[in-house]
Length: 114
Length: 113
Image 1 (cartoon, rainbow over the protein chains, first blue to last red):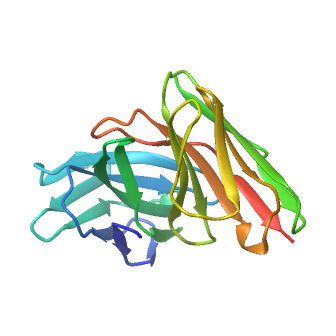
Image 2: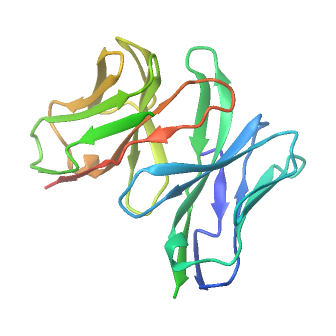
Image 3: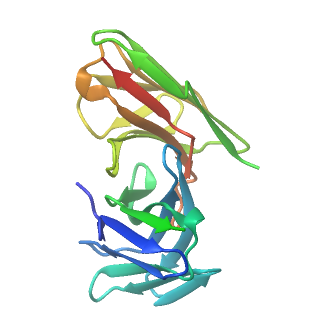
């Protein structure tokens, strides 16, 4: 089963607008990561936020984490057509056999229209 | 730097035929290795993971199997493919530590007809 659930499932915006994607999860976490997937390609790590952090920035990306609500958001500012992709959140859990295991949500498909 | 390869990139196979997908990692040693399947427009389903040579853990019972004959080689196999095996297969590696990122291969698009 999926730990993280992204909302919305699909988002269409105009170039230059901001895009906000949300992720909700069920159990306690140590870290939450966001990944990007271009169509037909593998996932690429974007940013990690630790459970004791509330906000983190990387370029045009801003991630927030609210552990009391078990939710995170990814904001892409001043979007570009090249930002068109699917975005996934991933939460971690420790497995005594495998170490750190990530569970991915269903993703948000973002389309940025030029 | 680390690199992860998958092949083939695309594959069209008839129902009942065998399958072998290969994944190799360069630039790291003793990685955790993972096989995921992704249906069109959907999230990732973890199929198998491996923490070392010959060590395979299955997350979903099905007609697929995995093997790790070498430290940086991970193979996904099937003796007889089903229509439901169609999908996008992703191999990934991680160091398995707290906060470790996961690095994905380019994927294999499998269509079973």
